[in-house]
Length: 527
Image 1 (cartoon, rainbow, N blue to C red):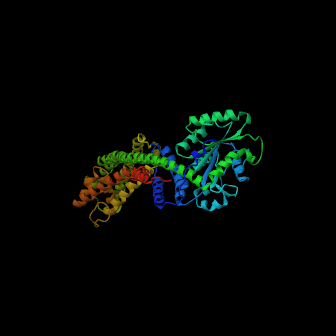
Image 2 (spheres, rainbow, N blue to C red; image 1 turned 45 degrees about the horizontal axis):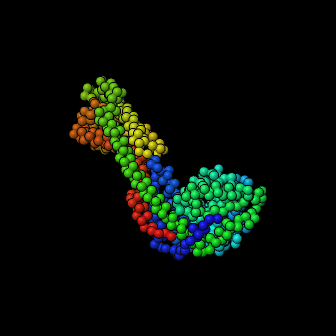
Image 3 (tube, rainbow, N blue to C red; image 1 turned 45 degrees about the vertical axis):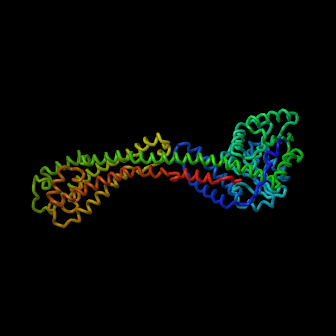
């Protein structure tokens, strides 16, 4: 064992601090509302965000809200004997130990009955099975954590999370496993974040004790952990149940010394101070990440709006140019107006007597077919414009860390959106035209006249003059309004195609970075 005084050397007052509690609570709210939707180091930032929340929930806030036992986490790789050590220290079988891996499926939190009440509302009680036992040193809570290298990802994540709650991490390894890279990586990371550490080398062959101890001390020195308390436990060979207490005597004495209020408070204070320092660094990284996200999101909004502007301008130009009426609608008009039922509308013939009978019905049906054909082509043009928006957005987002985000968005079917927009426009035109005074038009009834106005607004060349002949000056106003409404609805439909993308660009929160930095400066000395 080395320099226990390096760990057990400080005394603190455990009284809660309302002002710092309020600051930490406000900080937690800010951190929780952070989001990192863009691929700008988002995975690291989300991990860091989770780590900060765990530190706040399981260490800092509970400490400031009231006195509680020091949390000692027994952590290490698979099968190194963590549960057996806990059972030996407590003197009872309270954590399952055996050959089945992973042995610890549900963490066990062992506490002295006198300390149980202090942990009733602690978040750890939702992560572990709390087992009160008078064999636990009063003042300590001993937590048997899942394996750091568990085959189950959930267990590995939980083990890492529980280490954030530790006032002291007892890193348990064996003579055969102490070189494991994963465990050493986590050990160094915990030290960098200020967690107080101790190392237990378990199952050490008596004949190799000196050599193994020397090698492990060399590794610890190389990792900057030379002052960490080290405990060697000789190999007991095949056995069931707790170890002989003599084998764990030094570790047991260390923990029981640590359980004294002054010593436990010193460890808590040391870890809390270091955690607060690491927390400030983490908050700085989160603030920088939030600022980067806001800047990128602002840029993406501009790019997204611009991505829809091109197709919106294109559909407007196509409708102004009369492309919706080109081809089939124009040919139908020419055939129907050259001696056909629409000749009176085109000025190439006059309405025969009885136009309110079959002739009227024929003209109305012919005009409605024209309007239907032109509207169908308008819907196709609008569908093409709507399809262009997601492609333009995806292209714009790829270089700004949002390619995956764009791929996960499914906009409404463009064909349906286009059909609905054109149908709504036609209904609006029909409502206005059929409200005109009866008898204002002699060659068409109300539905026929509405169809004629629609065809004219869609660009059918001969239909416009026909509207003017039938309605005079009033017809010019009706037609102008129909054209303007068509263009407005088409452009709005295209721009709306960008809405799902704009909605996905949820900001971390305006000023989130600045607020995190402000709260970080208010933390002060948390210990």
